Length: 137
Image (tube, rainbow, N blue to C red):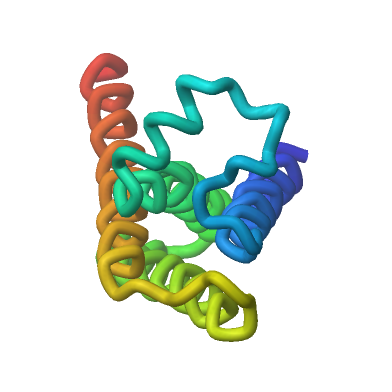
């Protein structure tokens, strides 16, 4: 059951990434449900806002990979690299979709920030896992 919840959360975060990446207004001013402080922050730190959801993507990909390989001999380095590649593909699709949207244009820095965000999320998960294992011994 935990495996399915993680997968659902992962798809939800990816859906949010695609939704906000493919809005016609990059300033997000049409999104009236977002608090003003968040809109101001996201417009001030335009590329950094790409990294934030990818922290969750990287974290959830690591959780999912660990749960998928629970009964197998698991090579963490290979899983880590695969998860970074998956995150890179997601951010490239999100940015590539902007070619089709008026008033939007893809940005290579967004791809960089998305990959770095995913890397931070994956490293954060592995750090928390090491801390948990250290406390148990």
